[in-house]
Image (cartoon, rainbow, N blue to C red; front, side, top):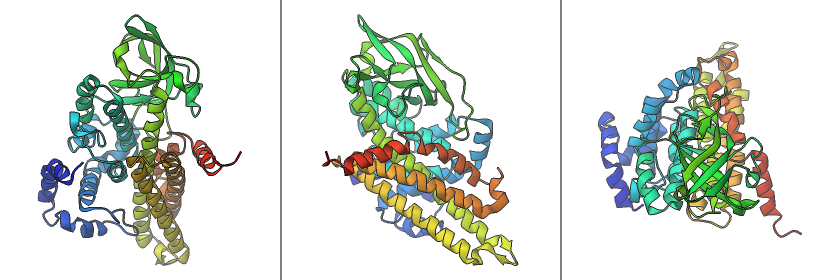
Length: 422
């Protein structure tokens, strides 16, 4: 997106933000953001436009999400109105093109936004990132008619989307999926089921990877199924450790008939679409882990300054100082990996798959460890639901499982390292 176009899009939103905070403008955002952090600065190395976007997302997270995070978790509430407010800021189709209503930003911009939003509610931000992936898939691979119909509705979050790849019998081995779509004149008839679907039952649009041809990856296509289609049903709402602000259900197809024109991209292109989507999904989910870890360090550092043991603050103890130093270093290292992978994906670098795998594996594991350390610094208070660190921990645990398990990430990295070995 050209700089001028970006400024035109964000100008009214930034003006609103700056009216609320008159001491800030784009030129002073860099210094003002540094007053908000205690040990590490997520604004380091960003352009003025990226700083402005980060400030906008952080402001929204702190004001609109963080005050409600615990309640959404406790009540398992899907915050539709709040997400639509985020979409009004351009966060509904961040890296979809502007042709049909997308925001037209790049993958690094998206990572910055998801990290900032995750401070407010990691679970909700993770769903927003999945919705963005679906919007991008339609915008990037769909035909003009599909793009015109769906991208504007997804960009505004008038409609919400779910991504359907995982099955009860095929998770990491996506190429072995068995959900079928058989041709019947001008229709496709779907049979099968998808497991662990974020938004399942509450969302409006389902991008489904299904088998339209022979075994293996070349027989997989991507189809769009609307909620309300006969033959589409949903399992029970799953009870989860975290990610409770987004529903998770099984999605079931029983002679579910859709027009063959609902194929996204070409027939047989589904596996390629899924893998390209997952490269971005891995960066997005790692960015969510970064935001939760960043917030956890800041909260733990603030707690250490006021919590006393043996008549002095925890922050006075070298053990506390060393732990905070290690935590901060791990988050900065993770952020560098994630942002490097985001740039590689945007530029279609030949090592994109490996870099995205490294970023996802390292950031999700290290950030989870950082959050766990932050909880430990809180002592018994960290185990109480009155403090957000336990929710960050619960919400981030699944990041090591989804978008390809971290074991699979290691396999992909090792395959690259040993690519010249036979």
